Structure formats: structure tokens, C-alpha cells
Length: 226
Image (cartoon, rainbow, N blue to C red; front, top):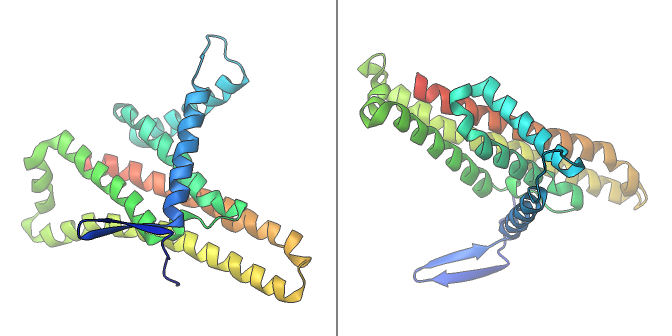
């Protein structure tokens, strides 16, 4: 695994912030999503046009997923789950346009996992209070305290490693396919990689987004309730 070379660095005191290509891609994706959200929600009508129909269909799909997975009392998480779904999916699919997916970097995968981890803990504290939250680590017995702590931390580790490992492996395989075809003839690189992109980029990228969302939703619900 080659080290990530920053495009440039910003020194702030004793700290140095590296601006990498993956970070730039995330900024571009966020800007595009903000512009798309503004455009798609302007001039909403009682009788929806094609644009509004697509937006409402997406909202209904996310709402149904949250309702079926978490229940009615968690409907306030629809905006977060919907935003995370679109953002994570686009990051995973950037390989289709010749850009390395930012999620192949463990820093990005860990950052996304930390957001979910913090949200899970915050929701549990909100539901049961500080005392109930920390008391849950000793349930059903104080002897379970070490295992319960490890289990909670392992959610963060497994969530980040699963996303990073699958996207990184898919990126490596695609690169190896192009290298092998390039050794034959440049013409082979035009059509043969298409089904591999369909599987490793589209299928695998979508599946990893779904798994990340489902694990986040399930843990938001179960950690607070159990």
C-alpha cells in the first residue's frame, strides 16, 4: 500500500494539515450534493413535476427503510440516513470516472465510522440517560463489563475496516486488470473492463453503502434499547 502524497500542506502552529486528493474529491462531492439539494427542492408544487417526483420517490424510499428497520420513533433520522446514503454511494462510485474512491483510504472510512459511532452513543444517552448508558455496560452482570466495552468499541473498528477493506480490495483488483490488459494491447482496455467495473464499482460500492447504513441504523436502535 503506497503512502498518500498530499497535494499541499497547511501548517497551523505545531500541526500540519495535509490536503490530499481524497479530501478534494470529498469537497467536490459535498459541493455538488449541496447544489443538487438546492436545485431539486426549489419551487416545490402540489402537483409534482418529473424532478419533484424523483425527489419524493427517494424520500419515500429512505423513509420506508428507516421505518421498517428502526421504527416510527426514529423517523427524525431520515435526513441523516438519506444524506449518508447518497454521499457514501457517490464516494464509492467515483472509480467509474477514473478517480480513486476516497473510501479506499482508511482515514475516510474511519471518519465516517466515527460519525456513526458517536451518533449511536449520543442516541443511547438521550434515550436512557448517562446513568442508564454506563450502567448498561455492566448488564446482565458486572463480570460482563470488559466484554461489553470491547463489543461497543468493535462496532467502530468493524464498521470502518469493512468499508475500507472492500473498497480498497476492489480498487486494487481493477488496477491489476488494467495493468494485465495493458500488457496485451491498449485496445483490450476499452471494453473488457466494463463488467469488472459493473461488479467491483457499482455492485460492490452499492452493497458496502447498504451494509454501512444498515449496521448504523441497527446499532442506533439496539444500543439504546438493549
